[in-house]
Length: 277
Image (tube, rainbow, N blue to C red; front, top):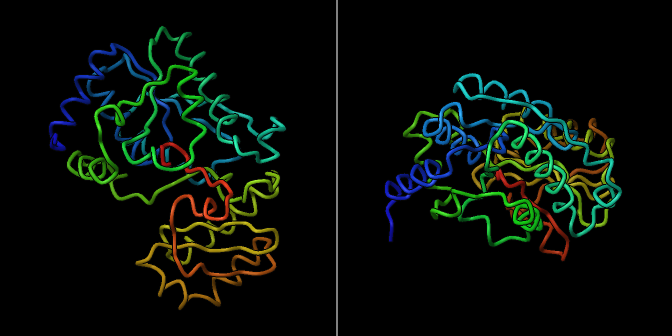
């Protein structure tokens, strides 16, 4: 069984052999670790690209930009327009496939224009258990997932990130806002804004790992197990803040946060491959 240190060496060797790379960067734990490692190995032959769209909260985009500046990454931004695709808007079972197809197609075009051979994403060894149609898009566009290839798991990536002094090592798991809607519920600009506002309000009250799942007029709040009691103690403030964001009813999920919770009802919650994913 390879050690974490051995996997890290394997990762650096894999990146060296690629020669040049464009990294799909979101500012999350996985993509930041991958971008930093790729830049360390490839230098100017590596470019991080940040996708900017309505499905990503503006605060997270700003934080990703700041992280890239702090770490000295070569960063380019690219706008994507998921809501323009009626299949994405309809929130079909393959929603993530359509989203990733647009993004990877754009990244492939940018890579070719820059003379970069490979497009990389931050999928890790823990990202194979959930329903992830986006993986099909990655395969179709020949996207390489080095963290997955060398067998690095999320906890190992956090550990290595801490050792490297990356500010993202303990960052809560993230995912695009489209994952907050039960499969079949249309995704709209208004709906995305409502979720973004509700989650921002929850974080302003001090909660870190939080999801607001939208069930029409009902907001179902999931928080990490370590924050369950704190969230309940804040129930009056939480309820007022989330209702102000546009929901009529507010509930707290007693099972707490878990990625892919909407799968439990035969619906689809697809964590963004940061993965984060």
